[in-house]
Image (cartoon, rainbow over the protein chains, first blue to last red):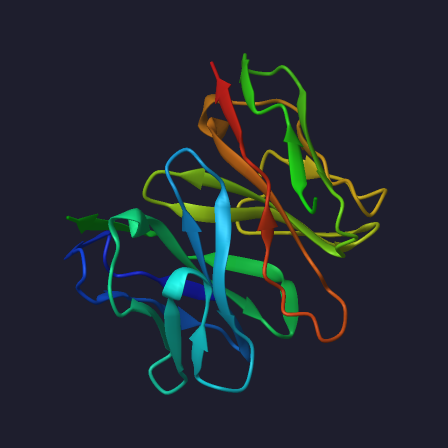
Length: 114
Length: 115
């Protein structure tokens, strides 16, 4: 069975400071890893993905994430947080051998204070 | 415009009254999924489909049915809804072609209340 853990329900940072939202995963085969963002009263939007290749992936709105195979982690990062980054963030995994099945973490609420 | 549409957006119903939530995508995607979102539980996959007439259970399939008779449509059926199916439901699609990268495009959500 595959799983995703987001160990922090809430992350608070000051505007302009770097932010990290943590994610670890478990999958039997090769992982496809994703971050999605959900703004209040809106649907989910794709942020970035790791499929293969470079371990550091860059996505929308200045976000990036680093795939670490040995630690089975895929932490989301941004060098300088904006108040508008405040939202609910989800990490997700798909197994390359069965890409139809998708597992999400419980989500992390990011609050960026001015 | 590439999009996933769901209808209805809001629904209040009573226990036991059969209902269908429709989902349609215009991106010719092979993969489609249904999720429910509950506070503190993230998104949980109900069912997924990898192509027409190919469906499989996700993590929480009990009480739900799906069908995929056309590539663009993937309706979610609750034959006898119960209060524990009160939730926010999302449909999503993604490409399944060789070389695809599988990021999902989500519909706007359907908020269902079962009394």
